[in-house]
Length: 394
Image (cartoon, rainbow, N blue to C red; front, side):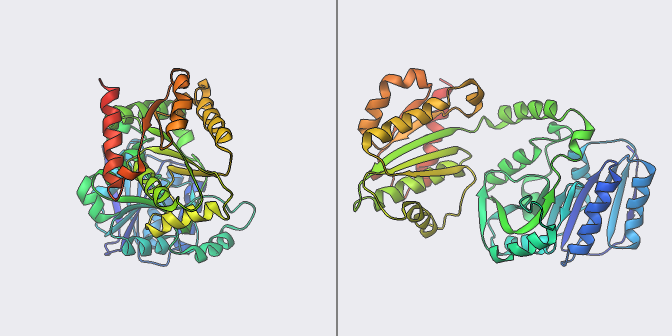
């Protein structure tokens, strides 16, 4: 491999890594918006994967306009190796991996760095990437400023624009090159961050528009690579589990049990499971969904990408049939990858109602007692996943 480097040597707070393989128009649009809309110190590290002469010349010219380091490769090494090349020479306390098919909006980087500094346990951050519709990108981005501090916790960040903390990179190392040209490398990196004790989040007040797969689709058969890399990820980490949980509560004596159940399910989600919680309040209650959100806020638990809560107010028999229908929906062939691994309920009568159908539903039942969850919700969640995985390997 041959390479030549163009650089202006300055200490920067954030190194922005941009792998490039041709696509000059997309690349220019990305970098011109980056330079116009970034108001915190940065350095561009562009990795040129053997692009055509026009693209290569454009990248070389960056050092005359901004602080930039350009690595030129003699062959196309793919996205992951290009990022790792840049990570190896990066020295900043923050690193942002940025696709060249993105458009960074005003204040995008400062918002992510500010959030990272305020949350020591967060290691990876995504901005918002769509939603502006027909509105100008800058106008939409400015409308998100009121969302400062709001975020969603996620099990995985996406690599289109991913801010990393230096201490995370020092802790877990580079991207895994087993994932080839790309796909599931960001999922794998997020899992490794989780194992090292770091959270992954998407913040609400930063906007970087992503032209979905604008560069990846032109490199090779994307779907083929995704299928290949999914198998690598599952072999390395196992397939994330999916849980369905149902409970009914009476008005007046529900909050303690509901609180324990909610935080238990949140713990399952934090351990890389997908969780659907169906709550039924047998008597009408005002603002039921808002009360659920308030419980999570009181426990300092933000919205989580993998945790879905649905609230009902139904007669008991109707709720049982509703749960049965939701479980039945998952046995369809098109839902095979999203089939529930286990169904949990605090309601013995509901468990009894579903028992005769367990073989047809292809879902294991795991009764739970909210009185036994208590404050050890996270440990119980991890233990539930461990026991289920052990049974799968018996």
